[in-house]
Length: 276
Image 1 (cartoon, one colour):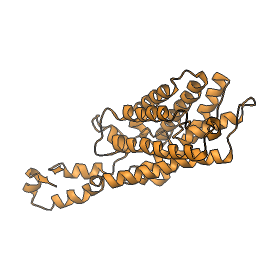
Image 2 (cartoon, one colour):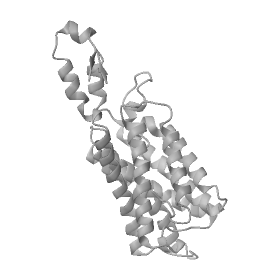
Image 3 (cartoon, helix red, strand yellow):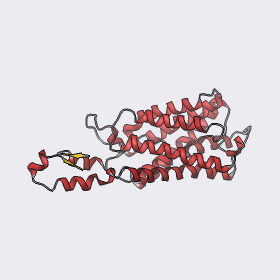
Image 4 (tube, helix red, strand yellow):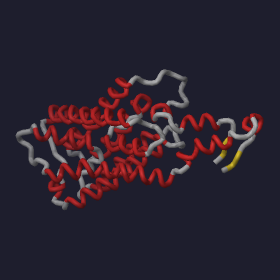
């Protein structure tokens, strides 16, 4: 890793919000207001859950692709406003990864807004298709441990992609939304037949809530299913944050190293390049 006169800039960027990182190459504009960020998370999550409900009801076999594409587009649409998390597990992973990307208070508001967007999206899908489904491992006649394992691991993969492509020193880039959407597509396709592939508590809540209002629903989730599909992704977020911290020490050392590099003379700091 190299350092030059951009040390102070790198130190500052280490604590920037995700939205600020995404728009680093854009002409300077004002920071989005909190209400704008929450609205972005609501709308983005709404369209994601709407896509889940409609594509599954259509039973075309292309549901994972449709869901991943809609997610990618929503991330590109709202990434510069809120970071485009659209998932309580992603929000938790970003919070646990540190670096000042989001505060605990804002993370809590994000989660509440994402859950609300998921519920409204699930209801909209129900109205459009007159059909619902629920997340329950019993639907696939699989033991709860199978769904728990796959929800934890593939949510960790999703959150890890978000942390690396959207929040790290690798950003900004033009592939972050595509990479995140492809992770969902790949995870859903890989899990087919073994797990329903929620990877997102807002999706679980939205679809299960709409399903509970459907008097003709084929099944209703058990208490154990609620726990698996809500807590499994959160455990995946914790795992992703731990892996990120374990593999990205430069994300946390940049401020210290930049300060050390700045200890020389002004001339040295302006012109010299220190290799670490």
